[in-house]
Amino acid sequence: MPTRDYDDHHLGSARARGGRSARRFDDDEPRLLKRMRHAGTATAFDTNADTDRPDSGDRWSTWDQAVHGPAPHPDWLVTELAATDTELGVLKTGKEADVHLVRRGVPGTDRTCLLAAKRYRDPEHRLFHRDAGYLEGRRVRRSRENRAMEGRTAFGRQMIAGQWAAAEFAALSRLWEVGSEFGSIAVPYPVQLLGTELMLEFVGDPVEGLAAPRLAQLRPDPVPLRQLWDQLVDALVVLARAGLAHGDLSPYNLLVHDGRLVLIDLPQVVDVVANPSGREFLTRDVRVVATWFAARGLSGDLVDPGVLTERLLREAGMR
Image (cartoon, rainbow, N blue to C red):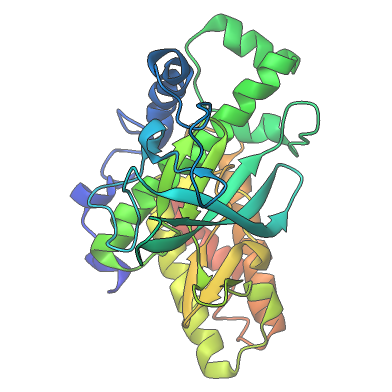
């Protein structure tokens, strides 16, 4: 569906809000973090700490302990408390997090699904790149937490990791709901959030367990190349109307699955209005992807980064 069919009520258009909203995407972060902090003390029975281990699988499902993704949950998702999780290997390693392939299923039944478990590194081994710039505009109400994050103490690094995970979960949840209704942006379904582990829909071949290729790996013919560009523009417009920019967009964090472009790696999602560098992040996102498409043969007029950036700034209420 063309992006112009989105209405301001559903997207919370930044233009309709005069450039600011009463409630930003990351207003949910403190509640998510607070809920996670208290989850350990509020839970009297931890199934995976108990001696009653499952007969199959590596551990019991953590679904009952986690913050859940948007309802209604997809039919393919296994939510039964009797389910177990089995580790199948590493899908991707990175500076901030590793992504593992996990099978969740109910023993003795055909109820199974594949999940991508994104696990942020522990404070001693984590290396967040340029995190200070991305964290501008994200609010944490407790001064002790702010000081710890600014000083990069061990506790502060843990708080930053929690912010990354909570920000990605909140952004994916919001964009999933928009995509489900309008179809012009695709992201993996955010299954659950527990601590600094994010469980996501696995995007790829569920039979073979092969992840969908990154855009950077492909050399599309002219027609599918143009289709992918149009999908990308629609997705960027959706983000801009929500007052957001990906923040680290490149052909390496765009998947192509059955001809559909899927945005991934959103922990650094930027509020382009609240973040003093928001305009620069948005401009860089556009420049990087426009350069890739132009190098693959799309017309320079079609992928002019200046024209697209101006359009997105208008959609975000910044023009």
